[in-house]
Length: 640
Ligand code: WT7
Image 1: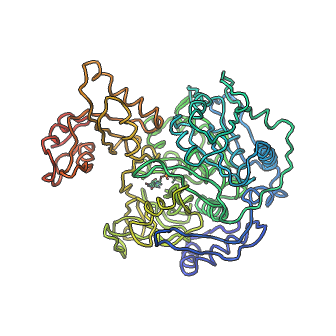
Image 2 (image 1 turned 90 degrees about the vertical axis):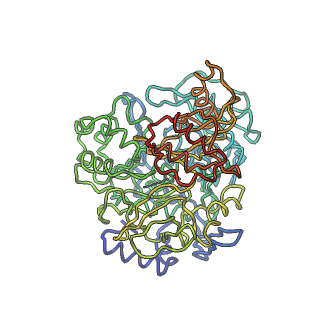
């Protein structure tokens, strides 16, 4: 397979080449793609200065990413399966779409979007469950040059409206409802609620999935099936510039509302394809399955774009790992003879707890590669995954990356890079990580631990945060001059292998989902009885990190005291969604604040970890007594 590394010496050589001459390295990969017009300049970049980042890859090039998925390969792959869709209910029949069939559906839906007046550059919000139409909708946007902004269908009406409004989306694509295990979620009703506050939205396209009753607003709402009726599937792709926006994806940070991370066409295309085929060592004909939701970046890059650009068969799963039983993942692996399987540590830990027989009763001999993503994987989970799921036979690729990087940055290449439990190992070719001290000094050599930054651009990196370039600079490029700040701490061991330790900022990684503490606090503070709150991460056996909220309330009656925790949880669900629901809520008399009014989160984190033996210097606290009271009422056992 073209551009795929096949041995360790080749990796080492390619890596060296990519560092010595990054431009030629990437150009050599890009030349295999289908360009309407070749680029004029490979790379222009600057990571410092207040208008940073300024990054352009393949400037002057003209292309369309869907032409690289479809037209480029149509003679070869027309009848090959592109997407296998496995429904929530195993009794419902799966759907297989060949490249030819998917292509026709994408073109037809692209024409349908045009019919509604959607043009190049318009933003389109997509709020859909894991059904093939989600992939069709995003590819149709890419086909006509519209910018997709996919919102995970677990976010609340308020969270959806915030995202729609931030980028003034013209339309929303949704479904009547969504199935998840035994539950049915009324997506259209949620969209209706959002749209009361979204003036930019002209239409909602509704796919019929559950058949439940929904309300329809004449003139605004249109059924998917009515819209595409009689629409031609002849469509010539919009010709895009390399640096034209492909999509926006919102993600949480330390402060404020989620940011719209913006990715552009050519760089994203090259990076997602290259990283996919190399990390997973995909071979023609393999069946690949990533269990993520397309609402997150993992699904964008490693269910849709990366695999389809490579010509892979990619499985899309609508359901959950534990329904109808805890063997569902392995039943699906067996059913389709999956070769590469990619999931999150949180799912692995949840399944370990269910017992090995759910795994061992299925035939998993087709598996060749196992991947993980989203959070650090602990050694116990790594070993179980390796031995029980992989039968000791399959290399594990622990892939470190972020929404902002758009693709895998540090990871073994399956079967090529020797692995070590809980290490993401080595950077991919073209990626130049660097560890720095809090003062910004480079930590050279091996056996060091520091803040993980990247010192050189890669094609898939974010270009800006939508509508607010200054925020992009401040968040990622202002901490250390000339470096991209990842927000993670990492260790480089004696072998030069990277181990990701976790976030060093106020971002919590709950079950591999990124949640900003400030966002959760803002949501909690919406409760009329809450005066102030402070949210921190605490160790959680399954989720990796759980959410621990300390809240100061107005005086509560007895019945209010009883219901306050539930009410706060509902408030968070209403403002963000279930994923941000605090696991622990402790009503406290006060928060540990310095004389200048800053909350000392360090102390709250320590208490959440159950360890008050070493709280550090508390002498700057306004009221040191409050710490004792918090410990006394803590929701976890605290060692003193
Ligand atoms: C954050 C990014 C990457 C797609 C899914 C999450 C954490 C990601 C790993 C890993 C340890 C990891 C980091 C990162 N993370 N992969 N293999 N080992 N931590 O994307 O929502 O943008 O979150 O997830 O903390 O910064 P995201």
